[in-house]
Amino acid sequence: MYEHDGFLMGPERCIKKHWKGTCDACYLLKNEHVRETLKHTLTECPFYTSIMRAIFFNTIHIIDNDEDKRRILNGNEESIVKLHARELITGSTKHTKIQAIKRLNKVWPSIVGAMIDKIMCTRHQNANSDSPTQLNASAIYDSICTEIELYARTAKRKAEVKQNKLQIRYQYCPKEEESPIGKWKKEWGPLIFENNGRIRLRFKDFQDSPYLTIPQYETDADIQRRNSLRIHQANYNTQRTNSNQ
Ligand SMILES: [Zn+2]
Image (tube, rainbow, N blue to C red; front, side, top):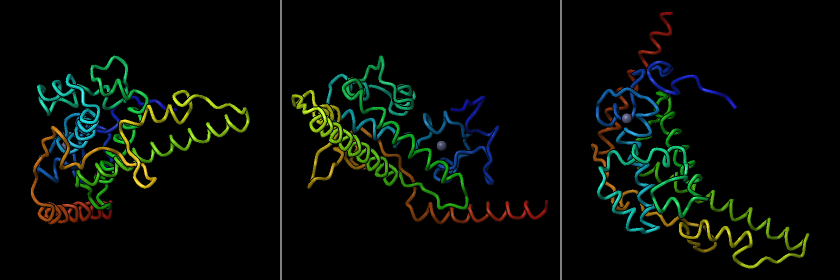
């Protein structure tokens, strides 16, 4: 355990070699210098929050509750992540007004965990000018889905081991709904389906995410071309500064 005494990220403690204190996604995609703080990345950045909204909207779409749909359709899409930051960033399910999260209260923290983990990994990769930039929202979204499937698989395996133990060691056969597997099915059931023994998430592709407005940027080739030059320059400037010291 460790404690933070201030900003996790942000211009004050930015150790990036290039465009210090600036959000890489906003700069490389939209050519805008935006103060990069944790608040920006997780609640304001149009690039990263679009991925968070896709996960959120897909969950709501699966549970299909009218009140949830009304909430997200009537609200301002850009401020939705900020409005539900407690649920979407900390994974808290207490006192939430979203019925889908209430229904999935056992697995929602895993979904949020996978989402924040992948988004922060991408942010760190983009912040390192030696690594290739990752600015493909769809690919990041897919990696989050794979991670959630992995969590579902692990939870199932754990339930199976527990059930076997009950049977072998205690000769105890609980009723279907009380058994570890039954509980797993109840928790994960709405989100997944099994295809040839493989657990798959019911989420739609990023491009087909219900209710989601996909932010439009230039084509991938244009972005890559412009950025490769910028990153080359950033690396060159750092090398020059280092050799001057
Ligand atoms: Zn940004």
